Length: 439
View 1 (cartoon, rainbow, N blue to C red):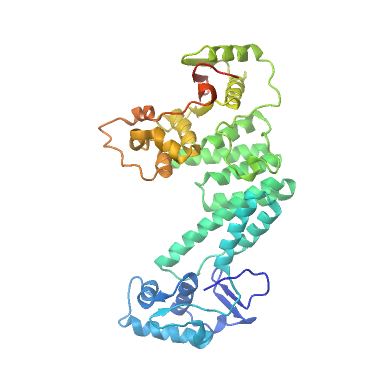
View 2: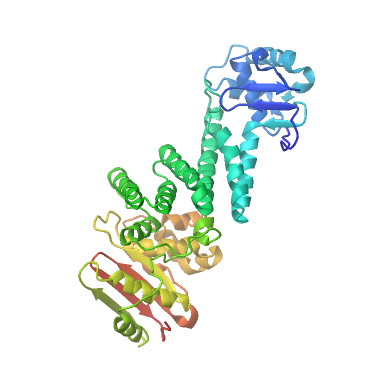
């Protein structure tokens, strides 16, 4: 069944979300439609983009218990629909398709089109257009699909529509944040809905934290993080993602985000820099320490530098400035940290490598992991998602996963400089390799 844009008044309107409704030429025929299996048959044909064979329709209508004569019952259901819609709407005998009078507005297709256009608007930083498309999509996707009917194919459609709903909510949240004051209410509502529907989807918490921060409700934003941290710790035994922990740290220090206005990478939803540490507008008061770090880093060879001190004196700020300058000069910076409640083995190494794996070009990544890829995928599931054709790793008893990290050969950046940053609540360690560190 073809679906056209609802630019002019459609001749046919078909709704499957929030109750089945069908209008043709402005007249509702939904009341005349036979219910039960006939409704499921109509929906199945509407959802298909091709003619369906009779056996396919029988499997869709009766997935568990088939009538004694399913072909006869199917013929009866088709006859009932044809009496309401007309024989031209359901042509075919062995293969049947739905042909409603054009142009057709079909709510499921319209929701998918709206989300697609919202993504295009996001890429173009067209925030008003993005929010309008999200409004159209959410008006449809907020309702249940084929209420009162159950079947495996219906469940699959519901899952697909839920994924579309979550995507629309995320886009709405991003658009509201980008607009600023006029869109923050929408961003908050979308983020809260995301959390309610998918409580383990961390993007909802991040959007809500950022929206609350923009409204000036920093304490509420910190509480949102704490709720996520406890949920993940108690239910899954893991910590929030690095990006959320960095955001939480920034909220606690009261530092403004860099480039937070509309049109920036943060507000447009583009991938952020691998190191997103909070930085003030100016760095003062630690010039001697920074010079010492630069001198140690430029002395050649491998270095492990420990920065220690009382909490709150600026250890993270100092090292952030140092590695930030190194990164700006072409250094490859890998970031990992140990939390007080470390729940993941090798957490700082996994975080550092996961960040790199997520942004490295696929072919370059394939060359770098070489034969160690299967073993490395044990502790880095993201690697298998980037390289789905990786062989299965050997049995765990043959080779401990701890040695897999040595299997990833990282490229030298400009000037053969590399910086690896590992930090905890008490110590920040930096390892620098290469002949020169230019900060």
